Image 1 (cartoon, rainbow, N blue to C red):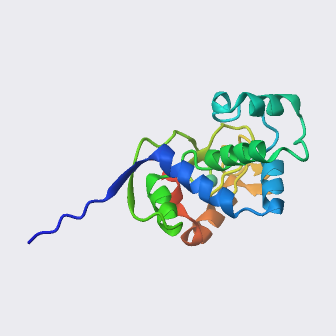
Image 2 (image 1 turned 90 degrees about the vertical axis):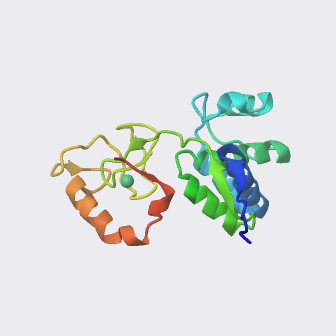
Length: 183
Ligand SMILES: [Zn+2]
């Protein structure tokens, strides 16, 4: 008799929500504070800003510096939004792997991956802006607009060509399945 194994389906948004909520649950006060600190400055251009509660939108618009002692439920909303935004552009395979690691079981993830820009160094889609000093999460190149392989990039303290060589040397140990390779 042939057995049909049914893999559970889940949307990308739900997967990200579950993963982010799991991480939120495990965070210490110190981790919560540093998450908020690292995610600031925030403004209307913050991903999904219009989906935030009015209270959170106001908190973001009223504060240039991250406010101290944010009320618990508002801090939860803020941290969750930050955690969720860190999964923008990651692959569905990576999300499935994370869900499995967190004990949710095996899922097939449905939904299109958000489109990010290609990092000039590793050539994976990791950057939400172009030439605006975004740092690639995969290879750590700071996208200062350098395109010529041999011109020195000050923020990176090296040329693009050196950075590419370094990426190739260390890439085996990097989470390549997390990001989409530019074709
Ligand atoms: Zn990169």
